[in-house]
Amino acid sequence: MSKICQLTGRKAQTGNNVSHSKRRTKRRFEVNLHKKKFYWVEQDMWIELTVSTHALRTINKIGLNAAIKKAEAEGNLNFKDITILSL
Image 1 (cartoon, rainbow, N blue to C red):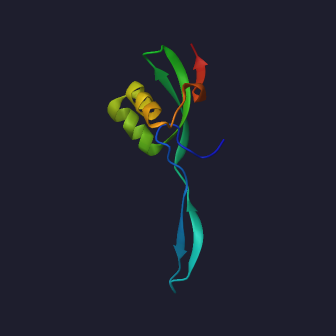
Image 2 (cartoon, rainbow, N blue to C red):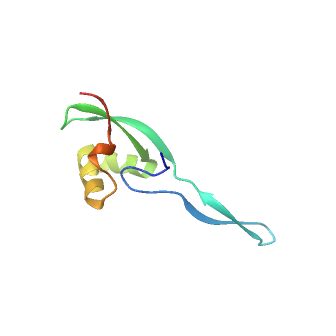
């Protein structure tokens, strides 16, 4: 699976390493991703998502259900991509 956050859609960006003499070489800025288990109260089940730390802050702020609905509206998440751990 690629390194993309399931809720925010964040993925690796490219940029430059700049040395002291200002020479530039290409590099990648990777996303800080974590596989995390959540209890989805509205559906009464445990799910596992690959989320960035920015998405974790969003979940803490607006809640898991609202974050999932927002991600689906933006086109970042399909319900078939959610790993269901137990019902």
